[in-house]
Length: 625
Image (cartoon, rainbow, N blue to C red; front, side):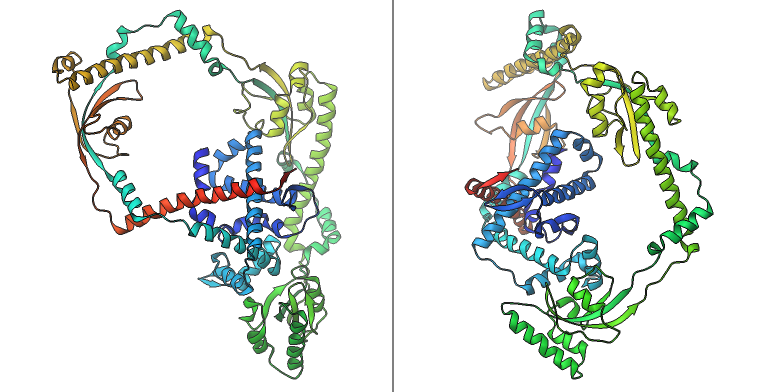
C-alpha cells in the first residue's frame, strides 16, 4: 500500500503542473502560502518563515487528498501516530523544497506578467463552463476558498514563477532514441525454453531437523515471536444522535427562537456593479491619472461598458463590460465595498484605490434585504432546537458520567445506569486491531494507559468525535512478550523442514544440471522421479504462461555461458530451466519508442529534481521548530 501511495505521488506531470491543475490543493488551504501570518514558525529557510498556519493547512489538505484517493487503506495507516508524524514531516519537507525553488527563481530574477497569469487562469478547466472561462464560476470558487481575485493572482504568479525553474530543469533532460531502442529490445525479447519441475515432496523422507537446530533457529529469530500488547475493554457510550428521538420542541419555543434570531432568516442586501480597473504597474501616479481621465470621460457622457471593455485591466470583467455580478458585503476589498455600497442605482463613484489598483465603480442594480417567513423555516427551526436541546442534555449527562465514573471507579454499571445505556465489551485487540469506537486515537491512549491497566479503574470521559463520548475500563490485559520455544516449536519445525526439503530438491536438480553439462544421459534420473521435459515458446519477461520464478530464471540464462539453471518456486518445489532459443523484439513503432523515451526522460528528470533539492538543502540555512 505504501508503495502504491508513493508511486501515485511521483511522475513527470505531477511535478510540472503542481499548483496549476490541482485546484483542490489551492482551495483547501494554500491561501496560507500567500498571506503573511504572525503565528509561530514551523521552519525558516534562509531567513524566510514557513508558518505553522501554512504547515497545518498544507497538512490537512494533503491528508484529505490521500483519504479521498486511498480511502480506508490510508485511514488505517493514519491510526499510527508514528506514520502521521512521518507524513507531517514529509509535508514540511515539500514546503521547504517549494521555498528553496522560489528563492532560486527570485535569484534568477524570473518574472511572470499579469497577462500570463490571466491567461493561465482563463485556461484552467476548473473555471470553465462548456470549455469557456466563466467569471461566475471563478468568483464562486474563490469565495468558497476565501480568496480575493488579486490574492489568488498573487498565488498563481508565485507558483508559475517556481514552475519556470522546474520546467527549465526538467526540460533540459533527454533520453536518446538508441537508449529507448535498447530498453524496447530488452523488454520485448522472448525466449523458448524447456523445463521440468520436481516436487519437494519427493525428498521429505530424506531430511530431518534436530532439537539443536530448532533451538538455534528460535534464538536467531526471536523478534519474529514477539507478541503485541493486547487488551479487552468494557465501555459505555453516549451520543447526541441517540438523545435526539426523545427531545420535544413546542410551537412556542420555535416561534420565540424565530423572533430572537430574525437576522438569521433574512437575506443580505446584494449589489451588482461594473468597474474599470487600472492597476498600479510601475508608475502609480500615471495609473491614477489614467483613471481620473477615464472618470472625466464618463462624467462627460461616455459609455461605461465601452470604456471598461477597452481600458479595464481586470481581464475577466472587461470582457463583460466591467460587470462583477451580484455580491454581498465581505466579498471584495473594504475600500471597494465602501464605495459600492454608498452609491445609488446608476451612480458612478470617484476614483477608488484598493490593493488591486484604481477603480471606477458604477452601481447597476440592487437586491434589497428580504425576511423569510416563519412557515418557510419552521422545520429547520424545529431541527435546530431539537439538536440544541439534545446537545444540552448530552453535556449534562457527560458531566454526570465523569462524576460517577470517578466516584465508582471499579465498575461501569453505575455509569451505564446514569445515562440509560448498557456496558459494551470487546474481545482482545492490539493497537493496530482495535474495533470501533475504541479505534479512535484518544480511546486507544486510555485503553493502553498503564495507570488504567494497573489500577483497574475507569477512564476519564473520552471524546471519540464531536457529539460522541465514552468511558472505558480494561477487562483483560496481555502484555507484550516473546512466545516461548514450546509455543512456536511446531511452527519452526515446519519452516525448517520445508527449507531443508527445498534444499534437497535443489541439490538433486543441481546434480542433474552437472550431468547434462558433462554430456551424460539423465533419462534414468528423471524416470526415477517420473519427470518429463515441458516446452514453453515465446516466454516474455512478465508473461503468465509459466511461473514467474521460471520466467525470471529463463531471462538470466545465456545461450553459451549458462544455458541451464534451477528456479526455486514459491510452493517449495524446484524447476530445472534450459534455454532453447532467443527471439529478438520486433521493430518498434515510432509511438512505442516515443513512450519509452518519455519514461526514461521522466525518470532522469525526477532524479535531477531530487538532486537539485538536496543540493539546495545542503547549502541552505534551514531551521525546523
